[in-house]
Amino acid sequence: MKIEYDVIIIGAGAAGLMCAIESGKRGRKTLLVDHTEKTAEKIRISGGGRCNFTNIHAAPENYLSQNPHFCKSALKQYTQHDFIALVKKHGIAYHEKKLGQLFCDKFSQEIIDMLLTEIKKSGTEFKQGAEIKDIKQQKEGYSVKLKNTIYKCKSLVIATGGLSIPKIGASKFGYDLAKKFGLKIIPTRPALVPLTFQANLLDFCRALSGLSVDATVTCDKKTFAEGLLFTHRGLSGPSILQISSYWSEGQDITINLYPAQDVTNYLLEQKQKNAKQDIHNILGNLLPKNLAKAICDKNGIKGRITEISDKNLKTLGEAVNNWRIRPAGTEGYRTAEVTLGGIDTDELSSKTMECKKHKGLYFIGEVVDVTGHLGGYNFQWAWSSGYVAGRNV
Image (cartoon, rainbow, N blue to C red):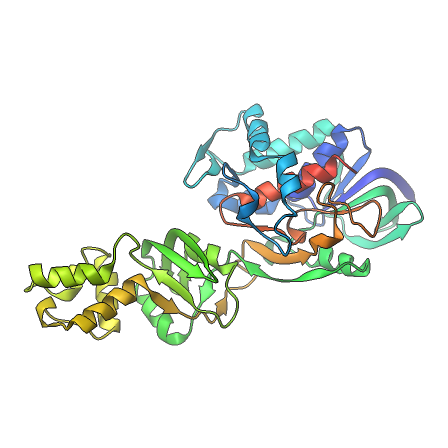
């Protein structure tokens, strides 16, 4: 049996849902297909269950890509303010947590319900739990085979996401399809992911597990100033997740555990003022007490500050302000929030998201080589790229 549509969208995550809404609103006969039974799990689990749905500061400089200019057109055509207006229209209460990050006051399910309501209004047909057997390019358009039925369309949109968090259905479907159509793919790797470390540093981190400090983390000339969390697996927290997108194997990262002050100068001053105090107590005026003691112990420096050489005080200062470490790796796609790399943007039109080599074929969302910083930026890319494709299919 063959059924014809104007548009078929594969993948019902953030980008696919937005694309389906816009396509349907334009009167295009649209079919949205997803291989899972649960809708938009990545939206549901994001932001601790409250969905960090966008960022009020979203701009091209918040995105990584081989072509940093590619995202500009989509972000301009559909901005964070446009999505916020949609959220307000549906009466969803939200708040800014920090650094422009917007979260639902209640539950992320509100965003999913909002999108599904808009899908229904648009007239889009939605098939879930549908395994795709084959996709072929026809003389005019494309055919998509599901079980015993072949669906034909003039425009085909791939919104199948990346490789991050496989337990909720992530797959390499989009990349495999791109290869089938002869498209170039920028090598993929986990991003916004905790880093792992060798045994000696791991023991240090485990002893401080659960402790969080505001820190700056630098790698490859990029610096992020956010929370850092010690865990039993190493280091995590927003600053580490952010820098993971810029870190490559074999590189060091530099951590400043107390960016507000030059700790060496502070310790030298305290040597003159508080000669009788123990060094770990003085350092504990700046850092959590257990972290201060752990740094002193790690460097083999103890006793009253007056008994400690200026050289050793400088060593401690460096250990706080300029802690250089080399990660062993990352926790991988299992815990990564997004996938870095993907469909080479040179293969697509930045204005429409249509493939240059194949008329009527579109790629949107995480499957494309555009990756946002932590804080709602990746959802905004999904909304923007999905909107643009939906307006052009």
